[in-house]
Structure formats: C-alpha cells, structure tokens
Length: 327
Length: 304
Image (cartoon, rainbow over all chains, first blue to last red; front, side, top):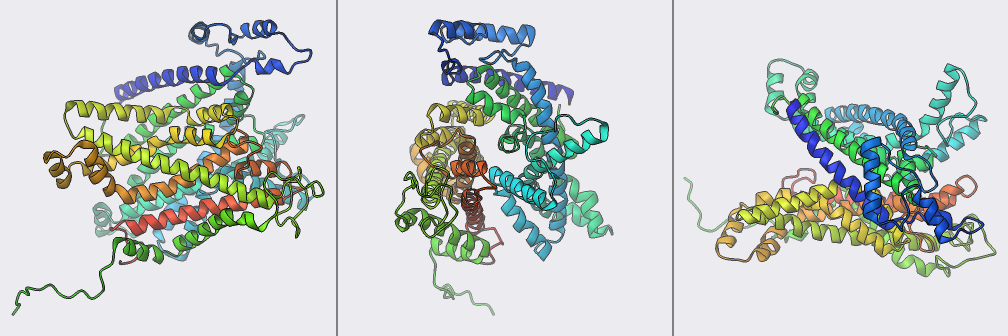
C-alpha cells in the first residue's frame, strides 16, 4: 500500500510541476504587470516602470527564460513564490487565504456529504414513494442551480430576515467583525458570518451525493449478497446497513475525494458574493491585477489539491472495497 | 400439437420507426416533457421576444433610470437606462448560443477523438501507442487548471464571446472524449467492426460509419447535459467579469448587474436568475428524459 502510494505520489508531483510551469508560461504571455503602473499619477516613464517591476522579477524587458530561472530557483531554494507587481508577498497571501477557504469549504463539504448520503439512503429505501419523489425533485433543482443564483438568493433571503427581525442576525459579507473580543462572542460572530456562504455551497453540492448514493444503493439492493443476507434472516434495514451500505459508498467516496479540489477553486463565486477572502477570491484578484506570481501559486495549489483528492480517492476505495488489493 | 408456423404472426401494432419509438418513450416522462415545453418557450422568447419591444439591449432610455416594471418597460430598466426585457432577450440568446455551439463542438471532437483512439488501440502496436498518447493528452488536460486558463483567455480576448467559445471548447472536450473512448473500446471488438476491418474498410470510414453511429444515444444525452454545464460555466465567468463583457450582455453579466443593487432594484436580479434557473433545470430534465427514452434497457419510461 505504502509503495503504491509513493509511486502514485511521484506521478502526481511530476504532474504538479508541469502544470505549474505551464501556468507560469501562460500567465506571462496573457498578463501584463505594467498595467498596474500605467494609471499612476504623475505618469511613470517606461524605464521607471521597468525598474519597479525588475525588483519583483516581473520586468517584461528581461528574457522570459531568465525570469523563469530566478522564479524557480527562488521556490526551490527559499520556498519563495515571488511577489505581486506592487510588492506583496505571495507566500503570505496564500498562507492566510488557504486557512480562510478551509474554514468555509470543509464545513460545507462535511455537511453536504452527511446530508447527501443520508438522503440517498432514505430515498432509496422509499423508492418511488412520495418522500422519494419530493426529495428527488428538490435535488434535481439544487443540482442544476447555478452557484451564483444560489448565493444571491441566500443573500436576499438573509437581508429579508435581518430586516424582519430588526437586527443583524446573519452577516452577508466578510468572515468576522473587527473589534469583537472574548471567546464566545468571537465564536458567535464567526458562525454568523459562516452560515450564509455555507448554506449556499451546501445547496449546490449536496444533491450530487444524494442522487449518486440513491442510484448506487438501489443497484446493490438487488445484488446476490444482500439477498443472501436477507435469506439468513436479517431484516431489510439490517441487510442494507451491514452489507449494502459499504459497497454503495465506494463511488460516493471517490466523488467526495475529487470534490475537494473542485470545492477550493469552485468556491470562487461564493467567495466573491460573500466577500470571503479565500483562494477563490485570490484567483479573481490576481488575474484582474495582472499578478503573475499569485496566479501561478493559485494554479499550483489547485494542482496539489487535485493530487491530494485523487490519492484520497484511491485510499478510500482500498479501505472500503474488500475486493481491491494493491501493492 | 404444435405445428411450427411458416409465416410469422401478424404484428398487432404497426411497425414504428426508431424516432417514433424514442418519442413515445420520451413522452411518458412527465418531467421531461415539461422540461421540453419550458425550454422551447425560452428559445421562442429569445428568437421572437425582440419583436415585442421597440428597445434593443444597448438602447438607453434617459427618462427611465432604475425604474421598476411598467407598461413601457415590462421588466424594468437598469441604472444606465437599458431596457431589462431587451437585455434578457439578448442575454439569454447569447448564453444559449455560446452553450449550444460549445456543446456541439465538444461532442463532435469528443466523438471523433474518443472513438478514433479506441479504434487505433484495437489495431497494431503503433496504433496502441497512438491510443496511449491521445489518452495521455486527455488526462493531462483534465489536470490543467481549466478555470484559470479560461479566465486568462477571456480576459485577454476582452469579453468577445467567440474567444470564449474557443477557450471553453479547448478546455472541455476531454471529458466527452474520455467517456466515448470507454464505450468505444467495447464496440471495437464487436463482430461488425472486426468484419469491416478485415474486409479492408479504411480506419476513418470504420470510425465514422460503424463506431460513432452506435454511440449516438450516448452522444445525444451528453450533448444535452453539456449545454447545461456550459451555461453554468459561462454565466459564472461572466458574473465575475471574465466571460462576456460590456457592451455585450449575457445572463451572467445581468446577474452581476443585479447583485450590485439587489435590495433597491430586485427586478435586475430576479429576471436573469429566473431565466437561468429555468434554462438549466428544463434542459437537465430533457437530458434525463432522453437518456431514459434512448436506453433500451431502461424501465423508467415504461414498456415501449
């Protein structure tokens, strides 16, 4: 198992290196850091702009290969991912924003998997009955709701509730209120900020797990080993719980593992709507500010998340499926 | 005594063409039919809706800035004095044109590349190497940060929807190709494909005449569901400002407009949000219905 993981890991590292360098090339050809200095008043001359950019290794006058070498040696020797065209450290930004995104993404992920799987089991056991039909109807809509629409509807609903109550029950922007002190007030404040973006992420992501879990469990319920379990005298519920659930969880677990990277970058819209300063927000910001090094760091992070997700998916399959042996 | 009859029993129902059969099965799904009706209404709206208003999406009415719905402007106006009804007609059209074009292109590319690779893999050693090379490219493109490259490309193309179509197609054909490849690898071992191969039919002809027609239903369903995915991707990009950009209008840019003033001018948000939701949900229902209708083993549509 360990050797298998190491081999897979090495393959993924190669993939990350290639993807990161490719992004460096693309970002340098599509983005022009000089734009950040063109609107400054008094206007700067071309030499001044070049000199300012050169100190951040972004001067378009320097050959691309030379800039690339400086950039890659900076990462390899000092783990320094460079700075933005105005001199902000990429390392600092990413370190801060990964934590911010994590707060948002993992809560939503755990909740959506729990709700999705539970609903899937529930509606598979009540196939074609009204409860199943209603749950499926809601899920079809949730599955096809664009993230932006879900986020904006949640914001409008929250504002309506806030106005009806007469005080700010939910915050629609940011992650915390400045100036709140004390343990419980801080926790309460964070939760008030987290609820809305979590709900909108949850609504757009739980339905996939619901549909998949339902379909997989229905496949398994008709299988020989569940029938054998029933013949041994287990009730329908017992047979499903002890024999059917585990194997029907395999594809769901795979999908969850792959959803982790998608969630980090896929929360772009949610983070924008709720002014949440995470990685998704950083992606938009770096592109519109021509921040080459920031863009590349985001891409590297996304590739890393994909790799971690894929390896987790492998581990999950091995852990859940007794038929799979590796190494 | 059973006397073997020489003539087959007279058919009780008239023979139906495949299309009629599929249509009969499709009609049984109430949700799918509802989806088709809604989607047809939306298409009619984008094609003919422009005739019902004197305004165009760029025309500015300075006497009505941020006005709610009225007789003159049925969906209200924006802060810049644009008629929201005219914008909705144009924006939905723009979103649909992008989505349908991209889906057609990705489905076509995916079909040719996927079944081509599968065909090569069933042949000689160099063919198997070719298949592995194609799959390598497909897998690599699936890891590449697609969203980021899309944003970079459409930012560089400054919101031209044609640039967006090219970029979306370039970054989303792989999923379809991968799916087609999986199915086509089983088809390439079938007798009729082997027979054609040994009769000396050239490879491209086998791919076009024997492999692709036999995954037709897969392609139709995948086309419909890709349209849904592309509408979502395009509106998301346009919403954050990297897709379609002013002066052009899509549902995504309208959503972005509406989110800026959602409490003071709610009609700016409800119009694009409703249209978008109707589009994606109705098309997804049609896609599911088509899958049930085209799959001969499916029981969802009842007996054919």
